Length: 410
Image 1 (cartoon, one colour):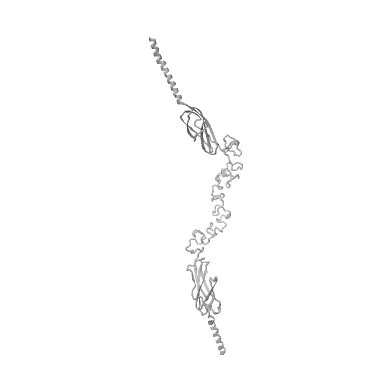
Image 2 (cartoon, rainbow, N blue to C red):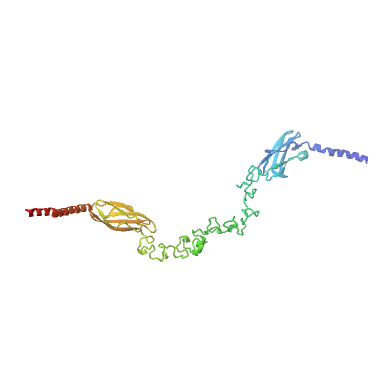
């Protein structure tokens, strides 16, 4: 038995010493720790990982380095070629996709693994990655809008979800994905006010729900007025004649919409729409009441060469306004205006014509006559006659009697 043991011993010694010969081409990556391009690691922000390999042998060696993050390879293999006794640096870019603690490692793979010591082919480190939800380079701890959705975290019910900001009904489901944001039983697609649990209809689309809106169809008539008129408060044109209820004199009669003279008969049936006494068929302005022309005095006696005032200010237009006053004397245009002054230079009768036009273009004309007298001349003649008469009276009463008395004495 002792002889057998002596024979086995050299074999065991050779087996134990065999690795020393196998590692003659050894490359180490474990001699230096991994380094990074930054010390502030942020979720979603790319960082560069650096590693270093050292050739501990007298041979030129080739191999690859693989980088790992949480035991998953990062990128592709990085080739290394090392002269004997030299060091070579390698790097790769890595973007952490989550926050928290991360295991980062690099491993060297030789081309001739039988000559390499595998015990120094690994280097591992651990880093902490800060949370940066929106990957804007600012950690959530100091970012006022973590998900970069334009709504500050203080006002954002889902500060880490860029697709959600609000949860109107507080059911834990954001409004974007919630089919009934206000939880009123009406799906948002059919809810005119999807964020108001008390309103679901807004007929006139004015932003006020029908419950609070006093004029649901926005036709100018309140809902209560429409109730009294028996019109549809949810329909601006109850009779579908193209005219809204407020502007329709007959909102429930599709055959009538206007009643110009307010006589209760629609214009379609009324033969005198403006009630001016002129039938529509012969009225150039069937929907307009012509102006009413009035003047202070229609029979005028005027003194020659004396200024006279013509006043038509009492004139009016029932359904509009007067826009023009034109005065003519003896068929000659004199002046425009509701009041004018004129001086007649010839005695006798003179035709005076006033034409008044309203804002619809309809005109009315008033004709009158001025009797122009030379009153001053008449006064002078009268005075002369009076003086002659007075002289005659004096003569016959005093002078003639005196002469008769003198004659009788003689």
